Length: 62
Image 1 (tube, rainbow, N blue to C red):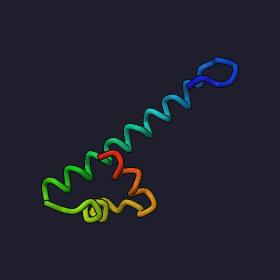
Image 2 (cartoon, one colour):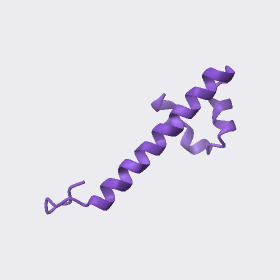
Image 3 (cartoon, rainbow, N blue to C red):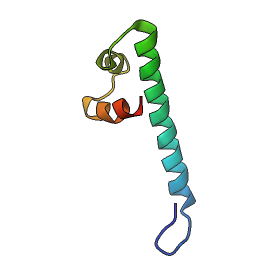
Image 4 (tube, rainbow, N blue to C red):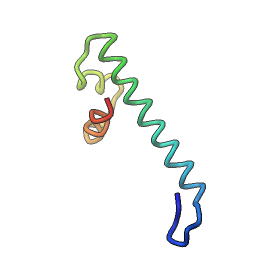
């Protein structure tokens, strides 16, 4: 990620990529549970104990 001086903040870039990877992994897990067990999105999120306030973010990813 570039800051206003045009320099890269590598720590922030790594953290952002790590967070993106986690979110993609969670979305993949939700989708897998839905397909494997014929669960609804909400049921799959309950299995993974996903906070209701985060559910819409993952819904958009699958």
